[in-house]
Image (cartoon, rainbow, N blue to C red; front, side, top):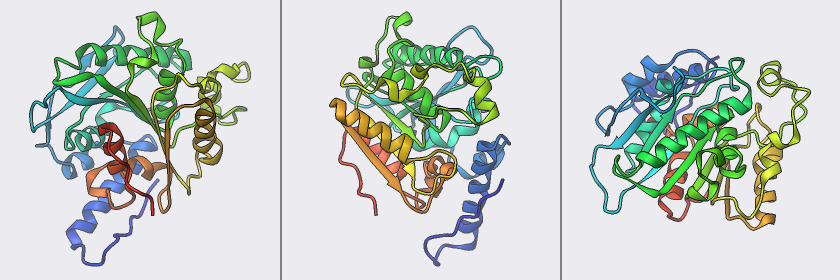
Length: 306
């Protein structure tokens, strides 16, 4: 899988264009299951953050996370904290390949936590959601010691990871065994997420969700209510993987009807992969994904689309 990115201004230098092409190809590779980490490491800054890596949050070898703390230091009252879950059809993914997400957030004064979780077929969706809940428990417990504000913790995810984030934020079953509830979250962010995808046609997803015995309450849309945390939903109008009208717009409409505060942005000129690619600071010209996420996390007015 490869993606060609056209620079938005002809004045970009040749090296700049090559760098953008490199990082774009790397992100396309990592989302399709290949490793783009080495290319990303060369193109994304290393001096904007610090923090521990490979931190255990549970007993399984996949229960590891990396922390990205802003290099600017401590913030009065603590910095906002975002726990990020990557996509990959619930069957693939490595936290190290998403350093560009952690770097982008840390460079904007946000503590980022990027967590691995068990994947299908080792576990079904209920098992991996249990892992994500454990990662959130760790994040809430350690937010203050990391320099963050425990009252300003959010979950965010892309694609399958957005599903994970949605279920933690909307369905109380996953946090309840840990003595937690969705109301502990200051908000949640979904990028190009599948929130309403029954019946299941993809063979990998069928395994992850035990199709055709998949219950209706496996869908985030099932849990739209007034109890949901503040919500930001981002998607691409040209997404050929996840239908943004059925999923993003559909969930937003259901949440709004229930009385939940929801912000929605549908971006032109990007697709499913580039929705998360635009979080990388060298690619912020693709679409205002990063600036929208940062504003939402900070509680600031969101930039306008278009």
